[in-house]
Amino acid sequence: MKANFNVEKLGNGIYALIRTEPASLWFNPNNIFIIGDKYAIVVDSNISSEYTREVLAELKKLTDKPVKYVINTHWHEDHIIGNRVYRDAFPGVQFIGHRSTLTDLPTIGAANREGSVQNGRGFIGRLEANIEKGEDFEGKKLTEEEKIGYTSDIALVSSYLAESTKFDIILPTVLVDDKLELKQGKRTIDILFLGRAHTGADLIVFLPNEEIAITGDLIVHPVPLVGSTSYPLEYGATLEKLRGLKAKIYVPGHGPIMRDDTYLNSMIALMNSIKRQAEASAKRGETFEQMRGSVNLEEFRRAFAGESQHRSFIFRNYVTLPAVAAAYRQLNPSAAASGSL
Ligand SMILES: [Zn+2]
Image 1 (spheres, helix red, strand yellow):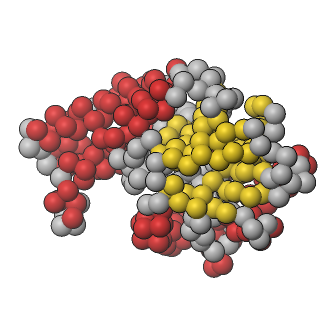
Image 2 (tube, helix red, strand yellow; image 1 turned 135 degrees about the vertical axis):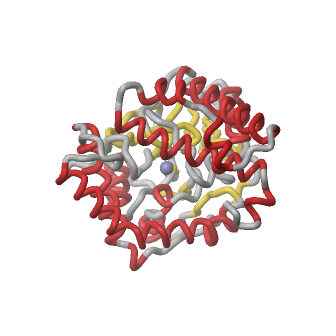
Image 3 (cartoon, protein in one colour; image 1 turned 135 degrees about the horizontal axis):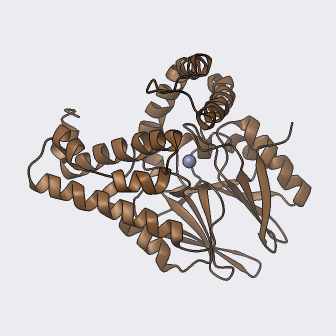
């Protein structure tokens, strides 16, 4: 079976493995290899060891050097579950992550994982039933794009669940606060924390000489992935710092390679609008329900999703709903702490 990625060479020893699964409700991330004279660096692992083994097999076609570092851009399942594949293959490998991973992965991460494992079978059942009935989650007639997306989701969830009894979660062994600079021969590799955004632990990998930014889920295409563990009030500012690095090439966490700022600018406009609207709502003293009614992202949904029913659903469920909930929590810490949300 052909693996679900295309390999794109971005420079001497720099390869991006760009996933070919369609944009849908479950995710597998792009991976990047940075290969030097003595060792290789891999950015992110995958949603299961099965997928990570395919990625490692690809690396072995390109080099016989060992992997010295795996950089996890954040602690979400799809970026870390396959870490063990590298540890098993390269006993000396180090895992680089943001310091807050040490707190967040065993707590919020573990709770999310438990939810995914518990609900996984049921989710597959709903996807299968939707395909069978020819209906989507909102009871609308299933489009071809939705059918392709659901079919891909079933494969991703199945691969994840198949390993769920023996998950081996690896915490970072090298911690980053704001910046870690690696030297790989003549190459400089900056691992940067630019601020909270998609999570509180988003690292980007910046190659200043090659002008390449590997962004993790700070950038996700075709629909941004704000998600429930995000910081929407800071997301826009963090993306502006990313833009300030003036990279010529962006490798997003999910989606194709980008060679200009067009998409990044659209994401910045979206995030800044969420912040403006949520803050205005809080100033008016609105409740959570009222904020959900008053924050209007319709213009952005149209821009990102176009006429696609599937992408509109993704936008509502991965941008609008979680962004407003997370913004409300950020603006009303006492409501969040009391569990009234
Ligand atoms: Zn991701």
